[in-house]
Image 1: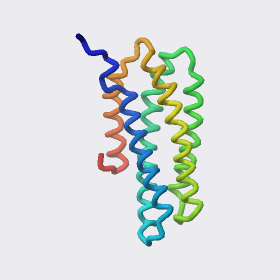
Image 2: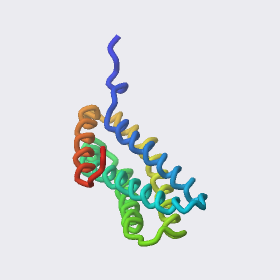
Image 3: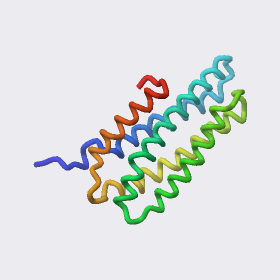
Image 4: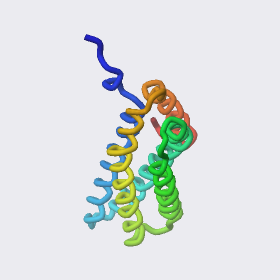
Length: 163
């Protein structure tokens, strides 16, 4: 019996793996906010920087590759318009976090709110956008996965991350 293409890793599964990775980092960050250890501040800064980098790369590959392909394949693009607005809000918070000089209560609040934004965005992508993408005709999500992975690797190298 032939296996369906649905079972193959596709663009949606790559993006969702990013979602799970960053959700885990947000959870780790939140646990650090309860720590009184002197090293917690440094760990929070490092983790916040890592979160910001991951999200910057993730939003860029979605905006460059995933969303434009969906705009061509889907009749209704209101969800993509909402996603673009959510990306803009997230980018604003990322800039504030990266520009912060102190790791204080406001820094913690910004990282936590960013996590809440991302959580909302992920639910919409997973439950609505990915479902529509997988149902769309003429959209090769398996091939797109390779394109997303290659671009992600390129951006991570540009940002000096160890992929």
